[in-house]
Length: 199
Image 1 (cartoon, rainbow, N blue to C red):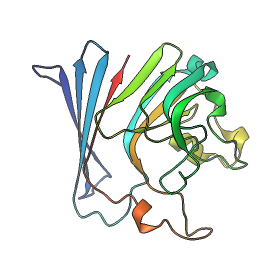
Image 2 (image 1 turned 120 degrees about the vertical axis):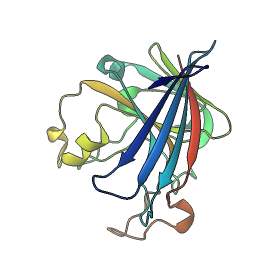
Image 3 (image 1 turned 60 degrees about the vertical axis):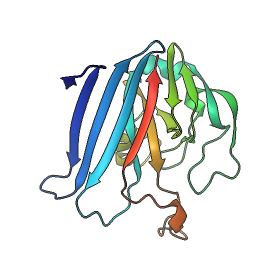
Image 4 (image 1 turned 45 degrees about the vertical axis):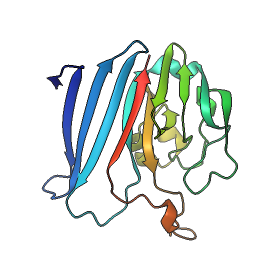
């Protein structure tokens, strides 16, 4: 973390151990009259030959916010993804945080809503800035905790509410059951830049 004229700058290199490919990520934090602004720039390096599931950031919020109501201006009212968004519309929506996801018989990530303009949960507010609008997911569990659970009862007691702000996500299609993701909905490695304001 380094100080700059406008705030703080954090540079992170994300890569698998002993790998020649990964991401160079820069977070720039600036205090503004609207709140704490965060600009994230992610640039891949190396010879990537696989798609990404997502590109974004995660915030660990107090667990008590899971009992609050979420109000957002963006797509809704239900979850949607790159290749399943025809029923989504842009508007203002309100729902209990715990109802934003789908309770599948085998736990899996759920509840993504792209093209966010603003989101409020209790006293916490996040707004997107600029032309690229991140999508959001609110979950009592991390993606890793969900991946490890074979059944809902195996999900651990939640100690946070996790907010994922994704610049992009790969589509839902899977060769495991049906067609693969169509080319226009595949998330191949590329540079991304997005900004949000936290208040």
